[in-house]
Length: 312
Ligand SMILES: [Zn+2]
Ligand SMILES: [Zn+2]
Image (cartoon, rainbow, N blue to C red; front, side, top):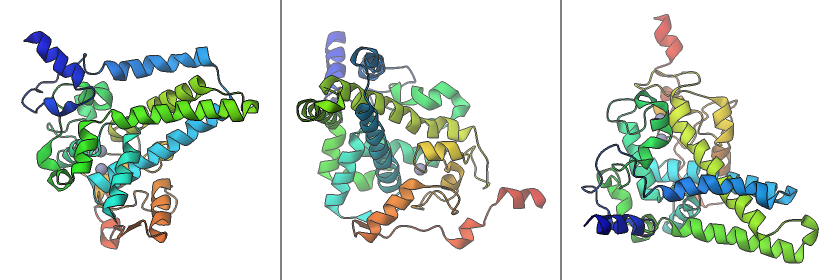
């Protein structure tokens, strides 16, 4: 019986439909299931074996930026908060792009994020730093109970079979992306030998290093952006605005703004709050790829200000 359970868990790396919410209870780390996550970190050390080249570093950076945009703009602002609209085809392409970031499927991601907004920094918050920094950064998704999707939070997304498929086989897109990097490296090696790169270098830098940095920067919004930074709005949580995180995460660092009004497509509420994802979303709306970007209403922009509260 125990062997069968372990086999099911191994199989869940590829197809997670065998694991139900009832199977996953408790805060214990699910070591068997998180082996791929650990291996991804160790694989990054292969940079000392494959070496580096300027083109490998540029591809790693571009790979990071493209997928960070997919996470902040699509997984977060679209799937989790519905802060703009798109076609069903657009929705699927956004989900595919987001899935390359190796942060599981869009429905799983949105379900846990919506729950975070429901209970921000309260007992039921799944990743509040109040429960420990490491827990808020990584523990919450490595444990048993948060492996499954909280279906009651995402009924609107569950009706799309193509999104459910991406969630069920959430390792397929990252593997395809890693193979794409491998192919790109081989192609550059064959046709542009002057770049001094190869397949293994592109795989390690373009996929592994880029993905690990991307994952930790995304996770920092849950951990660091609830600890370090300034607070403009009186929200019922410890969310903070952090300019450095906003640069690294293409706009997500304006987290206190976001908790104040999560529906807004824009998280940098003022012109000096750089929000690259929003600028790109605006560009996409001008091209007709997305529409109905939710603005921040003027009355909300100036409501519940911390300074005002303190003066009273
Ligand atoms: Zn938050
Ligand atoms: Zn959010």
